[in-house]
Image 1 (cartoon, rainbow, N blue to C red):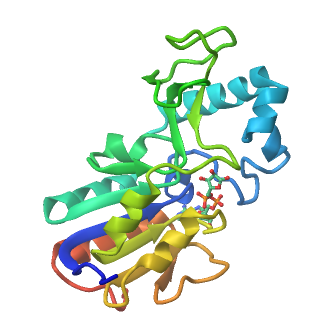
Image 2 (image 1 turned 180 degrees about the horizontal axis):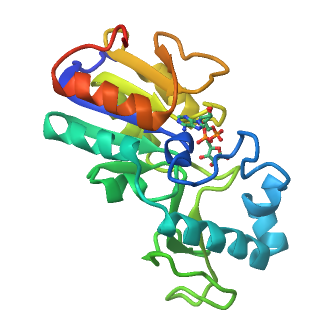
Length: 240
Ligand code: APR
C-alpha cells in the first residue's frame, strides 16, 4: 500500500501522564506514582470491576476530582498554540481534560476520559459527567450500572486507527511525558515517517524510539521552546 504524502501543516503530539505532572496529577510509574502500592488489576481491569465495582468507582471518583481541580500548565498551553499555524492532532493516553482546557481542539483520548461515564451493557451510551462521582446504583438509560469511561487493561483502546492515519501524514511528531511502556499505543510512534521531524521529551527515557531526538527535561520548560521554534518555521535539531 503506498504511503500518503507527508503534509507540512500536520503535527501529531503524543502525550502521557508526564505532561500533567506539573499540574499536580500523579504519573503512573515514577516514584510515588499511581501504580505504586496499588494493585493495578484491582482498579484498572474488567476483573477488578467485577470483583469490587464500589472500590473501582471510588478510585476514579477521587482521580476525577483531582483532575477537575488541576489547571493546564505551560506545556498544555504551548501545545495548543501550535494550532495558530498547523493542523494539530493531540493523541493522549491521559484521561484528564487539561489539553482541551488549554485550548487544543482536536484531542484523541486513546485510554478514555474521566469526565464521562459509560453504560456497562452498551458502550455507545456515553454520558458527560464533569467532576461528578459515579455511585453504585447510577444506571444508564437501559438500566445498567454506569462505569468510568476508561480503557482498562485488556480492553480495546479507542481511536487507534484515527491516530495511526494521522501520524503517517505528520511532518512533525512530538512525544511528551510518556514512558512508552503500554502497548499497543506505544507502538504508534513507529508509524512516524522517516522524513518527519521527531522529538521525544522526558526527564529520563528507557528506550529512545527509533529516529527520534530525545531532549532531557521537564515538559513546562521544553515544550514551549519546541513550539516556539515550529511556529517560527524552524527545525529543532539542536536545542541551545
Ligand atoms: N515533564 C515531562 N515528562 C515527565 C515529567 C515532567 N515534568 N514528569 C515525569 N515525566 C515522564 C516520566 O519520566 C515518564 O517517562 O513521564 C513519564 C510517565 O510515564 P508513566 O507514568 O508510565 O505514564 P504513561 O506513559 O502516560 O502511562 C501510559 O499506562 O497505566 C497506563 O493507562 C495508563 O495511560 C497510562 C499508560
